[in-house]
Length: 155
Image (cartoon, rainbow, N blue to C red; front, side, top):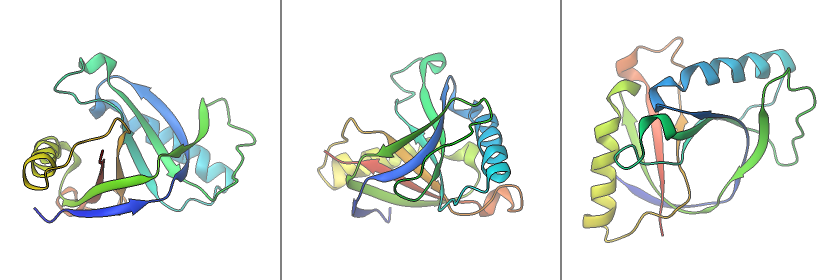
């Protein structure tokens, strides 16, 4: 596994939270992007945040969020009735891994990444959430060519 360790500054995001199975987060991204487009939001990257490990948390209790990275100091204005929040992803050390392929096939990659972090690198996972950066757009990219950068927080 080609895993890199990076130091990240806090990342300002606009988020739309979701509770439930991770594979049901897509409609939140659609709502978020509808708002982004309607309001001309200066988006830098699209991210997904994942707080819980599905091996230990029941699927109906999994916490995640659809996010866009925004400039520091961004304020929401009209949310169009959506429960949007401006937050900061915590800064710190992250193990990163670039995955290429369909989103539906990512679950085993997380297990491999965690195993690599704990057993090969001898590091632990912190309580901060993991997040994904979506490098290309699934609306115009074949599923087997989707690029996702996974960020796993280190303790």
